[in-house]
Each structure stands twice: as structure tokens, then as C-alpha cells.
Length: 149
Image (tube, rainbow, N blue to C red; front, side):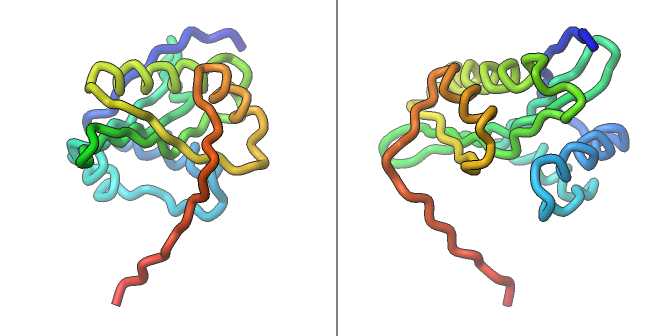
């Protein structure tokens, strides 16, 4: 299928948007909970979060990416999260379009670096990230799970 794609920032909660995201989330992670309208509203209202959608000429949402921009003492940084392209549209340049768009937006916002993580099994994604200029850092990512009391 040869569809034309554009990237748009999600700005309002709609049933169609929630359905599109909930179609993509299980393709990102089997543990990802489905998004509620309330949670989506919180993300879209957060000034640090920029949810970008790849939309076809026919209105299909083929992928998404979240760019999170935040200040730290040494400057502005960005983090890319929740990158997923619908399996039906993989190989059509949707991931590249989303990633390049996020990098350009980060540049416009004065960000010094953009970071992301990617599981070792996502070989195709690694090739994409490296082809647009990301480099693997010699670092370790640690996670502490904060449980509600």
C-alpha cells in the first residue's frame, strides 16, 4: 500500500485518537495498558509532552512518537518515547518521518541532546535510529519502580 504520510501533533482528545493509540500500544509492548481518555488528556495537556502521529492521506494513523522536552541545569534535553509504527505500514518510511520530525522540533526548541532507549530485539528500529544520526552511548539505564502506597 503506497500512502502519503504527514506528521501532526495531537492536540485534542477524541474517540478516534484513543482508538488509534489503543490499536498501536499492544504493538509497542504487550504490557502497555490501554490509554483512557483521562490519561490521554493529561499527556496532551502537559507542556513537556509532544505526541506526534503519522497520518496517511486517507486519515489512517500509522504510527506515533512522544517527544518529551525538559530543562535541566546544563540546558534543555529531550527524550523520545512510545515510538511505534503499525505493523501494516512498516517499511514505508513512517518511523523515519516521525523520528526526523521529532528531531527537527527538538532543534527548534533549543534542545542540546535527544535520547531514547530501544530493546536489543528491535534491530530494524536500531538501524533507523542510527541512519538519522543517533549513536549508541556507553551507559547503563537503571530503573526503579515506584509503587503507590
